[in-house]
Length: 323
Image (tube, rainbow, N blue to C red; front, side):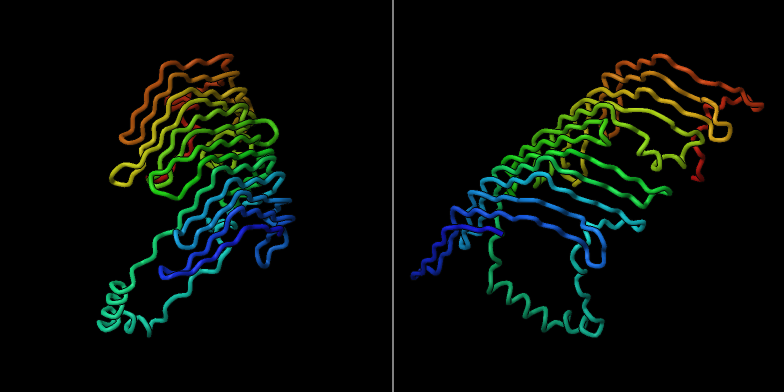
């Protein structure tokens, strides 16, 4: 760690006041791994924090810029759903059973109430970061929950955030750009509010390969997907309703190109097309509503079979599960 700052401390009849200003910190060669693990899950060559300021009396932290580049992050989800990056601290200790009666006794409750009245809670800390910039990062996601493990690699990944603040009703501007498995690109940008949560995002995805995602839906289909790519472009709006539910709307267009599928039992071609394009999409989740302007299908092929029970083979490609 390299650290430089200006420090000021004063004390008078109104109390003590401590401030830091012109704070600059450089964290070099950071490597982290979970206890008991063999490999690192985070590598950061250098993380630089500049134009920092801290006021202990006002409970404020202000940072001008946070910059890091060429880092590496490994995220892993275990079969029980836990994530390695969310279980870095030990669980909070539980209160022994024999102490619960004491903790909830009328005397203890009265003492607690008196303490709350006599000692007002301090004001929460406010953190403001004017700019965050992560560039040329690599993120690996290993998911062990599906029947077959899934590995997704995003490299390079760039993230920028402007005007981050923990104050209520504040809005930040964010932009994420990444390349997925060296072929697909995804870009998301727009203003985001944290408290209450809201977002107005522009999304653009091109040539996103569906094959790495097959384990998520392979057991739900009686056919096997052998190729396919997804492209999407549009706007997503997320707002928090008064009841706390999220209201999501999406407008835009999407396409699935170069799709090819085969029957699992015979390995014969089943369904394929050059392009399936859907434009004029307008979706609202609360209440649900879907409108589509145009659906265009080009170079389509399907091997249709009329079964003895007068059903088509395309009607049974989804595995039926009990209600």
